[in-house]
Image (tube, rainbow, N blue to C red; front, side, top):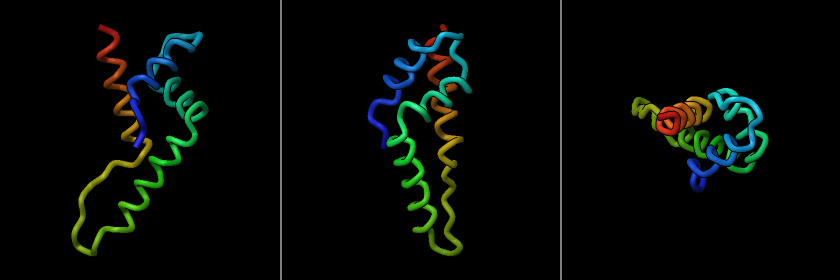
Length: 79
């Protein structure tokens, strides 16, 4: 997966000219770390293809999981 996402979020937030929000960090992440984003999507698609019929293990879509991590990071660093 992505190496040290917390550090990536920190770098993105430092380079933003506006107040860091979930959407701004998400958009910047897609621009600055395209290979990591692609890797997340690949892992998700491999997981979906490997599921057997009737056996479902929920895994959030890459967008949802990344947004959740960003939101958690923002909450932790805003205090």
